[in-house]
Image 1 (cartoon, rainbow, N blue to C red):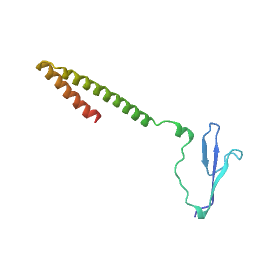
Image 2 (tube, helix red, strand yellow):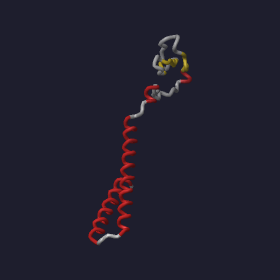
Image 3 (cartoon, rainbow, N blue to C red):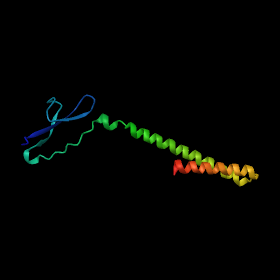
Image 4 (cartoon, helix red, strand yellow):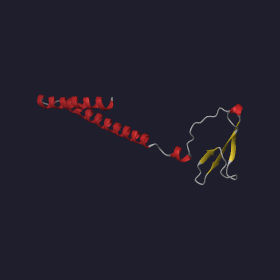
Length: 116
């Protein structure tokens, strides 16, 4: 059988809001909800403190940095391929042209694997 319950809230010296079923200090805490037997469905979702919500997640930051690095590498590779295409348009002897074409194919393959 569920008894009556109260939920109290207070803010500590660091500005972090806390929730509890007990009062900590009558000056600081105030009653938020009173739950009776008829109103017993209460959400028990975890409450994030101010310190938790303002701190960036290390995994998120690392993933964002990885994406930025990959984008920079893709842009650099794309620019190299552009320069190589311009070289090929100028016209070179067969041996040099074949070398440049092979290099272009290799760069295109890298670009598709990494950036597509």
